[in-house]
Image (cartoon, rainbow, N blue to C red; front, side, top):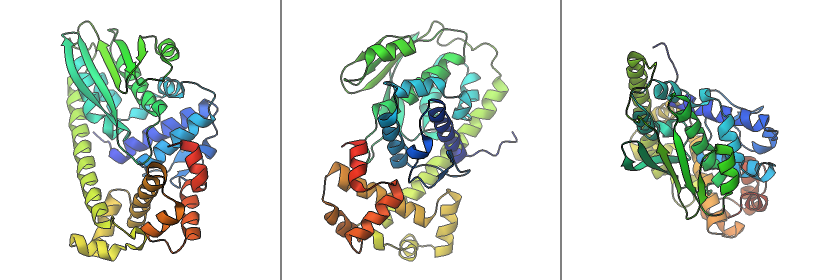
Length: 338
């Protein structure tokens, strides 16, 4: 196919599309990205990714500084289809709308780690019921973050066929159902705790006009290879983080972890490099997760957190935290709430 893109580059496209959309909506991207080292001059560097903690921090800051009451929907409507990388041509050449939805569910994690779509039920031959489930993290998901993903998915599905896809949404209580309905031009209810999408389309299983079966098979095979690579890479990284995690995390070193997994230091460094990361970045990401779990979720005192993770003193912990997030722990809590 002549394509060199891998799963990390697809995620990179999505994040850069998001940052461009934030900028187009008048947000100060430099301020939003403060402390996220992989983002330079408003763009995610080639080959780099943001982790889930960083992505959710970005969204909490964006909502807090935006004048848009439904920022997630505004962003989702403006995101370019190019931001989805391989997913857009794959859906465009799918055999049917139903297959396109199933592919979106299967390959969503190639784009965004924020959550998963799941097909709950088939209401009828022309209707599908889906749920969007945010991933667990030490930083709670902001509803506008999830709305951006849902809106972008609806926009993509609506653009792949001449058949009109009718959507209706049931969203968590407290969201602006009337405002979201006006933006999306579909019925919206805000009740309960879930993100539920009902998709209806006459001819749900009929062929999409103008599709190319050969191109579909090529992109499908490539997407499946990317998903396998992502899953294998994540499994490897989870194994390494398992050996890193524990008390006194700050003191954990690469030689100890390499010995625990039965490889040399050089081999471990090479495998981490293949996944677009390093021992330092992986350790820093794990530290951030643990810090935020203790600080935001469990509300532990700073001194307790510093001691539990193995920092020499509280001032050292403060310097590390500010280097990661660009603000103090107290300021961070005020930005994202609990």
